Length: 92
Image 1 (cartoon, rainbow, N blue to C red):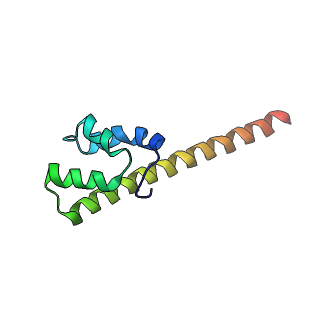
Image 2: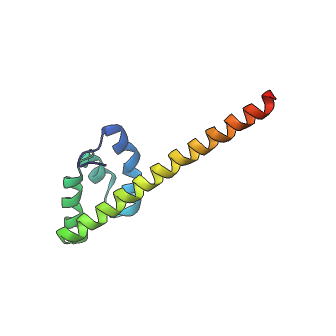
Image 3: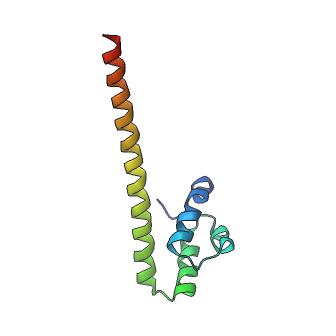
């Protein structure tokens, strides 16, 4: 994920962000609209993180989200392959 997130993706991430950083309000998260730099500033203000710590927190969060997305893609691919094999078996 790059520095700015598309608005559609942000809607999906808002809940995850609020779970991770529970002190942030709905209004806080909505204001960022996908801008990671603004989120960093709010996390420093709210949690007292250092700049290095907030960068690490956000990088770990984004890596976790990317890993989950990769897992979902793999799961869909595996399911499609399974269905393709079943279709072959049925056509015999």
